[in-house]
Length: 334
Image 1 (cartoon, rainbow, N blue to C red):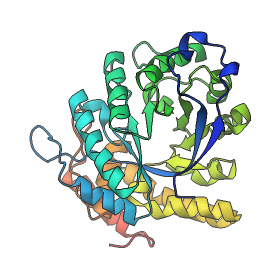
Image 2: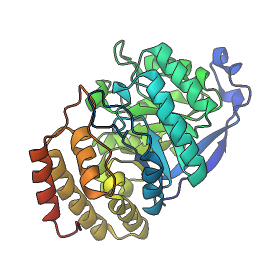
Image 3: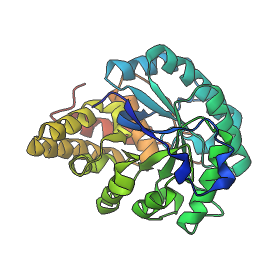
Image 4: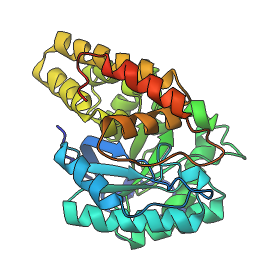
């Protein structure tokens, strides 16, 4: 289950009612479905005044993930602080990860959203040029889509910029402020976006998540993005996730999904409870990104540095308190 496996479904061009976009995708013949676990990787910054990029640690980071059974990465996402980086920085980070993913046979998903549309299109084109396996895109964050049709139109434009690369929509309403129902959206997409393959569902509203999984006869890949409801989501039919804890506590995501697959519901719930205990401690000391990045620095052999403004890093005292509490958990080893 932790491998990024894929199966294909034939794309029937005759069913595409949006002729305007057909000619832009002459080679689109199939929808790709994925099954597995991806780590949304942190972007390492040096602890200097400008929080400059630390590329030197990335080969070690990639090997760490491979050694821990992770077979794919999401680059420049929420955990990766893509929204506080320049377009050129995001390109450079994606290029290094493209090389590392090719060497380590990791699936490479590049997040291209969270920027003005011209930059989103530039990042999409670049991701395709460097051989990304898939791209992920937030909605427009200023002129927010008010309807499913608005969102479809936006994603059609993005898809045109990378017409040979599978596209995923990033549903994270707590950050984006866009809370369209994903079951309704997926049933409406149909074949209007030929490269469209699914969504990252970062929400704990599991009835909506279940509707997304079942949409269009389970045609699309639904990556779970909410670490705290893995057991419930997998019991409902989710088969894939992109969860921050897969960086520093990868064993839990792997064990939970395997327990559900084997029918061991009680054990899956116990593993979920353990993971949630750790997450509760971690997030007590700050917002999601800086607290999880600090946990990565504490629980792994890597030092990925601080976060970048305007994301507030944890203080040394907060980091020490977090470390002491985490080490008191029976399943955490120093």
